[in-house]
Length: 443
Ligand SMILES: *Cc1c(COP(=O)(O)O)cnc(C)c1O
Image (cartoon, rainbow, N blue to C red; front, top):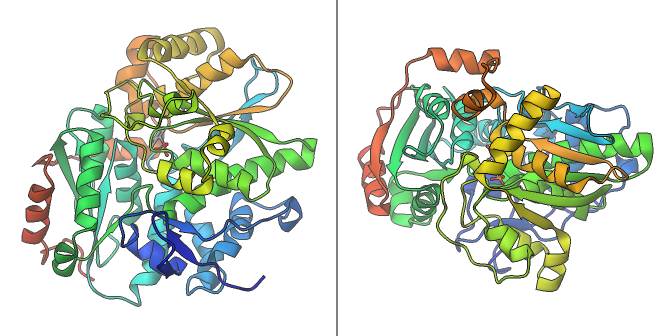
């Protein structure tokens, strides 16, 4: 029971690491993704039925941190990261169905949970390692703002955000460029997959790392994935104590970080039933779960841009979790939803039911509409606030979307981003030239 959990790379079991090393590094040294050697098992009885989301997170993550330097800090880490509401709200027009609203954090998307947890970990780990650190983030829109908000003005840390120029919403672009201080936004003339490749190449470049120590804050970081498990566990356990049945989830999916957190909660033995992935026109995962060979491809732009991913990174972790392909294929179902259907779903629910969703959430809402399964409880996971995507939502529904206060404050600040070629070497040069500051916030 008190044995600390070891972590390894998806690509080899030779090298093992402790959780604090895993969180500090982001990517494993062989280019693989870190995973626990085995997923801990927990029963509902390990949790307090009257506990808060943070209490659930503390009990859930305890076996992942046991014996580590961060273990004594785990309660504080969870309370800092999960200090906003994550309500499970019944959908009045859909018997038995609810929405899990993950967008009440500072940047109005679910990525606040992982980013805030990671930043809270880095604050503790920094005291033991004083070399200034650059956090590289590739973002399809929402990660960058969540990470920037979480690390803004944190001493000794600089955040460099790479986003695909022209492929994020105007409000997302504004959010990415509005921080200043220790946050720099780079608008890359390429796709999200290009940004992700550039970040991976930089992290794997030991010569570059020697000049400018780097870490990542992408969903490839376990420090983001693990806390995302908390809201699935909390919702499923809350339902379990009331109804004694598992909760089923439909998860808007791009890079597969959010949905994988849900899969791991189920693998740990907690009462999660079916998990369905809702994808946009980027159909790499739906094609695979429909029986085709896994075939990553270039991303195509859609109105649900935070899911414009053709090569989902966390597939490597999913295949590690289920090494036999027939077993893997049995775990999940995935559907691709095209832009027209996303638009029709948004209009139908706004006019028919006075429900506003973001375009990503609409892919999951569409699947719920198609299911017509009123016998089992389904949860649509709402990944962002619709006001972040006003340029998509407002022309469709013909009315303004109310902007939450944290987002409104960001939009009032001026914003700027530097151009960057979609080229690994260009990013390396940029980082080397700026390795020694001046950074706005000194350590
Ligand atoms: C990032 C994001 C997604 C996709 O999540 P993954 O973990 O990459 O699968 C979906 N919706 C929104 C709003 C997002 O920001």
